[in-house]
Structures are given as C-alpha cells and as structure tokens.
Length: 164
Image 1 (cartoon, rainbow, N blue to C red):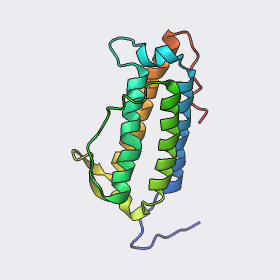
Image 2: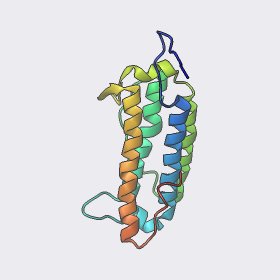
Image 3: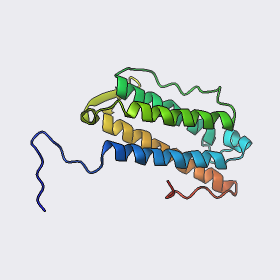
C-alpha cells in the first residue's frame, strides 16, 4: 500500500483526540489513586521527605487547566499552587472533576496546527505546545508514582496502572 502526504502536511502517529484520550486516561487513574487514600493520610502522610500526596495533586491541578487555558487562549498567567481551600479529599476530587471538564473545553479550542508553536507557559517555561502538554502528562505520572509509593507504605494496593 502506497500513501502519499501532501507537501503542507506532516505525518502524525497519533491524533490530537488520541492524545487527549491518553491524558484523560491518566487523569482517571490518578483520580482513583486519590480515592484510595484515607483522608488524613492524603494530606499528612509522607515518605523520605516528599510532600504529602495532596500537595502533589494540588500542583497537578494548578498546572493542567490553567496551562491548557494559556495554550488555547494565548493568555499568560502565573503558576498558582496555593490551593489551601482544597482541604478535604472531597473538595480535591470535585476540583479534579472540574479540571477534567475544563481540559476538554480548552482542548477543543486548540487547532492541530498550533501544537508545533512555541509557547511560554506560566510566563517562564519555554517549549512548544506539544512539549508543554507532554510535561503536564509526565508530571502527573511522576507524582502519581510517588502516591503509589505512599499507598504501598500504608499497606494499600494502588489501582493497576494499566487500567486507564
């Protein structure tokens, strides 16, 4: 089978929709990890000097929708990780769900050709739209893995990572 690509087209391995589904699969898994924590331990338990998982999740919330909003709208905003109002697991889960909806909303506003554009997220992190989104996803995976260490240390089986 021969396929040709028009001069102005770039071959892609996955579509924008595929990438969004991949990210949302990770977000679903992270949500289940949050749910697995006992309330007190979610906010207080730590291993080896790492922040409690709640602090890591608040960082993820501070990055995901605000970062994507900047990509979609061209706005610039500072990274604001001070989410002290999220002081219960229920509040964090509600914010997580709101952020999931916002990601879908902003994603729909990003045309495919924009993914290769250069961007500076949060007024300081240079890259492309693609690399910024990959950072958002990679950072979530990294922090979820730390949460998994915490869960195992607490004697709790974390959700299977392949069940996204």
